[in-house]
Image (cartoon, rainbow, N blue to C red):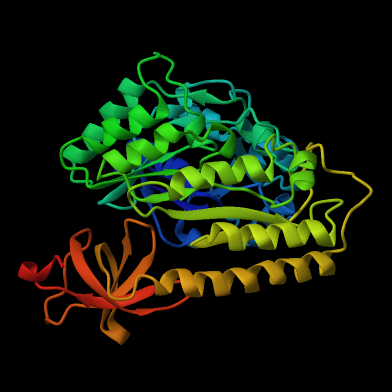
Length: 446
């Protein structure tokens, strides 16, 4: 018998990176590798990277330096993802014990790269395929959750926002054919998945290469597949958000009542400097469409504070936008310059301590907004998908259709199965979560 080929993978970044790792894991397992949970036990250590945040490449090299102590006879290292695409062969120079560097668009070539790696090649790269649409192939995907799964429908980005590195690491925007998306969704439903999340850097910028379906029509088609109970999508770009999407959510019960619509700033001037190509008023019109829906749709967003040139009035504009929209949650970050982006090198940089202060202003105000927003759910009955158990508190944990965390008790010794759906009456509300009690089967509706 031959020696067992083992691997360890560590993933950083967004849901698309997590799904990319599922593809890598599936490919490795198909090639005869066995996954281990400790890097010390692995013959191949892979680091799937993200370059969105500040000093991402320094963090990668710091992590690689930690891995260096694991060097032993035959142990190999690989850097994957956005930092791999961004830094390229410079990784070999700074970390000569790394043998494989590959961007996400080259994962379909991973089997061939593994053969070369096993043959003893020391420097293997996959960095030249950012324009391909073959990245959507998920033949060997190893899904980490048996009930909820991802499908990438858009790769890359054509927006070129002044702060963002994605167009340089993921390449141009390209969409997957609707028949391919639906075929994968049906396979997932047949395998027992009940929740599907459609992914893209700008998921609602989807343009069906076959011309058969708009993004909204694709949402409805996935939601109509037998066995699918929930369909989510992220991340939407305001420039491509349409009334048709809201109408699809209203008309299709399986489409989750949640929209993540990143605004980045509440100041029209900062939005112009960011090259977002919309104004505050234009964005708020899209919000009005969502709020006019028949269903109550949860709205979340991304915020960047401290963009070069941002004034106190610009910050105030962002705070007042939070109040006007009443977001159910935000992801807020300090601006950080990224390689090759237009905003990098601007002279009107804001000191980090001031960016930290501004971030805290935004977070404090949003916490109060969320406290009131979540309080409106008191007494309501929500359908919750079971995702875990907190045995120390005798609670079950799950998420609502609005993507809100719900911790609840079940009033019986037998815990509900993972991936099952239960009606839960909300008895307590907090700024970031809800608590409640599961209802009996004959008491699942008011």
